[in-house]
Amino acid sequence: MSTSTIRSMTGFGAANAEVEGSKYAVEVRSVNNKFLKTIVRLPDELIPLETDLETAVARRLRRGSVMVTIRCVASGSAIASRIDAPAARAVVEQLLDAMPPEIRERCTIDVAGLLSVPGVAGGEDSAELQKIARPILFRLLDEACDALVEMREREGDALRAELERFGHQMRELLEAVSERAPKVVDLYRDRLHQRITVLLEDVGKTLDEGDLVREVAVFAERSDIAEEVVRLGGHLDQFFELLAREDGEPVGRTLDFLTQEMLREANTIASKSADTEIARAVVEIKGLIDRVKEQAANVE
Image (cartoon, rainbow, N blue to C red; front, side, top):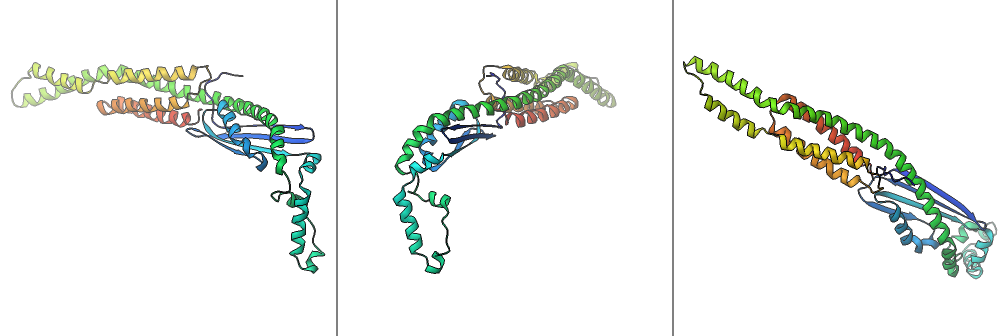
């Protein structure tokens, strides 16, 4: 089986078998969920197997809302051996006694409905049925989970391609921000020098270069985004490492947390830099982070 790390949480798998005339079918469906939530639907006589079936699902899947549906249709001989004849006769007699004579003459008995009456079928033989069905159902559950995981991995390949595309776009924008950042201080110094020079000329004074240097230094310290750019770049490195992992361990929650950290750094860059080009690039980066977060919500 593939050791792909990027798997979707949406999938479907099914398996069925016929053993000694009895038919068994297992279906497993999953959709998105932050955690693993498993619901098992199975016939009443097999309810004692529910907890063990949930445990078996947890060994295969880590996240998602999982619905397991189990159907069993016993062979005719199996049903006959499990019918409590005295109980069935008592139910029929009580129904007939409760009816007026004119209705009793025209009524018919629905066998399927009669078998569904508690105590008519099953009874003491339910433990034997569980013993017979248990290995069959667990084998079918494993096969259904195999099919579901395969579907999840196919969708995961598409998710990985989309996430990588978003990551590369963020990398390009961040590189543009990194190249632009040192120029911002120089542009500020030139604009400030020109503005102050014009103002001082009007009053017949000259610019004190020391004052200009101090003002530019304060601006440079206040708008320094180098640390945030490095951290965001580090988050991107980790992002691509997660996408490249092939150990089979789910990364959905890690990706979700990582997008929060990426957004934190992008917001800080936006708040510290007053440069229009950097602000525009950061807006695009934040948009890409949101798209990554949306897709990460689909990853197991």
